[in-house]
Length: 99
Image (tube, rainbow, N blue to C red; front, side, top):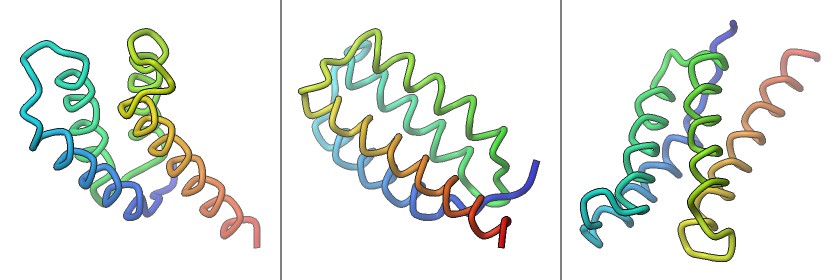
C-alpha cells in the first residue's frame, strides 16, 4: 500500500467536525454517530496514510450514511461531499503514479 496525501480530505473533515460539534449533538443521535465516524477519518488521514487504512473508515461511514441518513439532509450532503473528496484524492494519486 502506497502512502497517499489526504490533506484536502482531512481539512474538509476537520471543518465538518467543527460545524457538527458546535451544534452540540445529543448523545447517540445520528449527528453524534456521524461525528464519531468523521473523527476516525480525520485520524486515519494523518500522514503517513495508506489507501488501505482510510478505505475501511470510509466504507464504515458510507454504510452508516446508507442505513441512517437521508440523502437530502444536511448530514447527507456532508457525507456525499466527503466521499467525493476521498474519490478525488484517490484519482489524483493514481494519475500521478501512472505518469
